[in-house]
Image 1: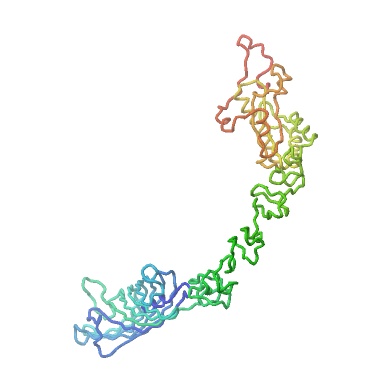
Image 2: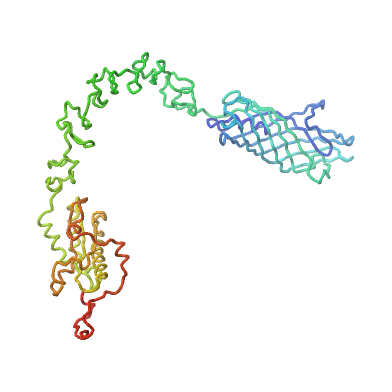
Amino acid sequence: MLSMAASSAQAQTADRKTALSGNVGLLQYRGNMGTDFWDRSEPDLEVGGGGTLSRYLSPTFDVALLGYYQTYKFSSEVRAGDNFEARVGMVDVGLKLKLNNGKILKEDFFIQPYLMGGGGMFLTNSQGRANGRNFFNQIRRPEVFALAGLRFRLSDAISLDLTTSQHYAFTERVDNLYGSPNDKLYDRFLLHQAGVTVAFGKMKDEDKDGVSDKKDKCPGTPAGVAVDPTGCPLDKDGDGVPDYQDKCPDVKGLAALQGCPDRDGDGVTDLDDKCPDVAGKAELQGCPDTDNDGVTDLDDKCPTTPAGVKVDATGCPLDRDGDGVPDYQDRCPDRAGPASNKGCPEIKAETKKRLSEATKFINFEFNKAVLLPSSYPTLKDLAAIMAEYPDYSMSIAGHTDSKGSDDYNLRLSYDRAASARTYMLSQSVPAARIESRGYGETKPVADNATAKGQAMNRRVEFDLYLTGDPNSAEVKYGAAPTIAELKATPAGVPTVKKAPAKKAPARKAPVRKRK
C-alpha cells in the first residue's frame, strides 16, 4: 500500500497533481511465535491488495492516503500447534521524500528512488491457538511505518513501483502472546509491494504545440506552427527569426527586420529605407535626424532644437498656449503670458493692490498668534487670489515692533504668520504653494519711537511669486530663521525693554498692552 502511495505520488507532477494507484502485496510477520521476514519458503502464497490517493506538493514532497488489506496465516516455529490467521487492514497517511527532485536526480529520470514515513490505524481480526488455548481478537490500534521504494517512469502519467515497508502496530495481540523481550510491543509486519499508478490531470499547454508550458521556452507559439522539443518554432536559416515569420527564410538576416538584410545597418530593410545609403532612424524610415527631435533633417525648420524638447511636425518646439514662449521655456505652458514673465500671466494691478492692503486687515488677540474673526474675510479673499493664479506661490511674512525681547518677538512674528497660513490651508490652498516665516523686529517699515510707527511695524505681509522662483519675502528681507532655529529659541514670557529703575513708577500702561 505504502509503496503504491509512493508510486502514485511519484508519478505526479505540477501538471498532474492527483493520482490513483493499485497494487498487490505480500505481508511477512515477526512476533513471539517466530518470524518469516525475508523468507518465502512457505508453500502457500498469500497476497493482498490496496489502493492509494495521493497529491503532489512540490518537486521534493508528496502526501498520500494509503489503504491495504490481506489475509495472513502463520504457524509457530517455537511451540507446535500454535498458529494464527489474521485479516489485516491498514489505513495510513504518509509523507514522501523524492530523490528525483532536480537536485539529486532529474525529475523525469527513469529510475526514481524515494522514502516515505507516516502513521495511521492497524485494523485486524485475528484468531488461532496460543499456549494451548484458542483465541479470537478484534484489534483497532495505531501504527507507524517507514518505506523505501523505486519508481520506474513509464510515461508522464503511468509508473511502476517496487517498495518494501515495515509496519509497527502498537499491539501484541495479533498472535495473542504477551511478555515480549524488554516488555515492548513485538508484533511487526513487512510489506513488499508492486503496483501501477496513474496520475490524473491535463498537461498545461496554452499554445497547444504539444510541449507543456513548464518546458515550453516559447509559450506563445501560434496554432499549427511546427516546433522543436523546447516548444520553439523551427528556424532553418538560423537567424533567430522563426520560419513562419521570416520574410527571407533561406538567407540569414536580422531578427528586428523579420530575417531580411540591411546594408547601411540602420535597422531599416533596404526595401523600406528612404535613405538606404546613409544610416538613419527606423522611425524615420532610415533617414537621419541631427537634433533628435523626431523630424528628419530634410523637413526640420528648427534644426537646432535642444535635446528632449517636444516639437511639432515642422521640428519647432511646441507652444500649447500660443503666447510665443515655447513650452520647454514656458513656466506656465497652459496659460498665456508674456516672455518677460516667463510665459506666465502677469498679476493684475487690482490684485497687487489687494495684496498690499491685506496687511491692514489682519488682526490678532493681544500679545498672541490667535486671529481675530475680522481677519477672515481678507484671508478668504487671498485664498481666492491663489485659486485665480495657480502658477504662483505665496509668501507670508510676520513682523513686530521693537517692544519686548528679540527672541520673543521673533517667535511671535513666526507664529502669527503661521496662523494666517493655517487658516488659508483651511480654504483649500495647497500646502506646497504657501510658506510662512517670521522676522520679528528686524525689518521695520517705520520708526519704532512713535506709537504710529510701532503700529505700522506690527504687520503680516502677503506676496505672490512664480512657483520655482526665489521666495518674495527672502528677496525683500533676506533669509529668515528656520523652524528648527525657532524651536531652539527658549520660550518664555516676553521681556519688555524697561526704563531705569528709578523711573519705573512713571510707566503709564502695563507691558501686556504693548503688542
